[in-house]
Image (cartoon, rainbow, N blue to C red; front, side, top):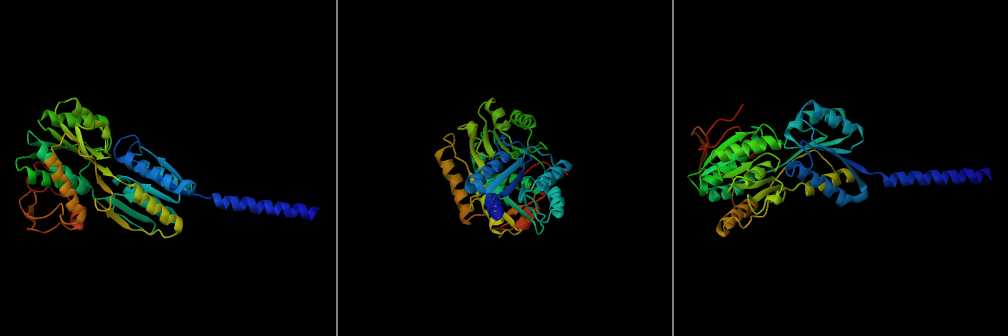
Length: 357
């Protein structure tokens, strides 16, 4: 009788252990710089998190922290997430770079991935999208649609990614409309609807009738909607609530497939540190619907550029191109190399103003 009870207890213990093993989940964490409802950059990263949940079902558990300030607060948030048992943590803003590096060094058994950064380690990978490819396409639309020949651009921070986007949009806008000028306002924020709306309003009052942005909220489109015949574009997300105008198209960051691939690599033991920089061809950068506010021939021209970039037939940075000071950067037919693009700290010829230090 005693033996039977011991045997029953052993079987029960093994059954519980087997259940625990069966229910063990891969824990996936995300650190966001803005709120998941920003309608832009963070919203799309969170859509990627939801795609992971949908794809893997009960094999994963995802956690996130939103509106994490860059700096010391970020390091604390990433550390807490690692302590909570996360197997992989995605930190999704450039300003999280050093914090991610520091925490990754303390947790060698946790995998980390940092968006838009360049510092890697054995357990720290980097990833980004070639946003500048999408901005080239929007540049065609901006150059064709402006009536005042004045295009406003709301910059977030003067880092290479943003400078690269300004240059890419300007080059294509200037190609289709030699009379355009770019006017840039730096908001010094990724997400602050009030500041973004103020910047858009100021640009509109200065006569800019097309507004591009490298900030994360829908506030510029909301401000433009009250100001008459102004053109805007969705940034990072479709911002479809402002279709068919002022938002006439958008750049959409499609993170879901990447997140699914990398979480899957953690699960099957094949994850390795790497650098990923994907664009239109890979589907990480998507051009949103071009609305009927855009003439058919202009839409066709923009989509032709999109397709040429995707096929490799055309590079957004192709010479002849000079730097702002008039010095030669790219000779006829020469393409910019990735190292130069990744460290871009200059405007191309024709853009007025200086890059803040």
